[in-house]
Length: 249
Image 1 (cartoon, rainbow, N blue to C red):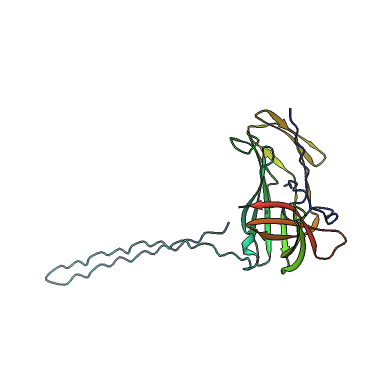
Image 2: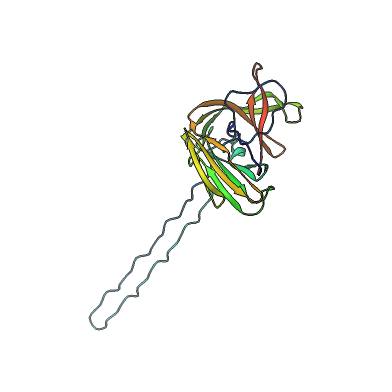
């Protein structure tokens, strides 16, 4: 039987405890970042009846107005042009049956909510049936972004680049994890950490999912080569970050 240890690191933006040295960060799976529809109004015409005169009886015709439905224009995002590029769903690479999806929804010009979904697949390459789906049931984080600044970024390869990043302050929700699906064979809550035995073809895993406790963390985002890079600060250095997670559309 194969065991998979899933460590709850930061969510899409940052990890508790910050970064380490200037070396490359490993891409460790995090815990577990819909516009409204507008409907046109319906308009109905009035009915008109003609009057009757002496000698001949004349009846006016009855006219009914047609019902007109307005089109549904796309919802306008409140995000600033600088941050709108981060909106939507982003997926991390599959790792041994497991894939994370982060969904970013703008709640203001510089604020986003971030929700995490994790899925376990029957096959190790994340194909086949989804045997378990888990989340915290609410957005994991509410994030406030600052204007872009030039920073030093250490990539997973160890290469250092200079890039404009969007620093962020993230406030986590207070919530516990839940998971369901045909592969979930048992669950146990120890303190505020949920353990679930998840079975798939050829094995199973029992990952821990600690509760979110409302902590505040710091980090940054960078969009580079169509990848969303979640960054954490490098301790002891100003405006220096390393990559914690990588996501793609």
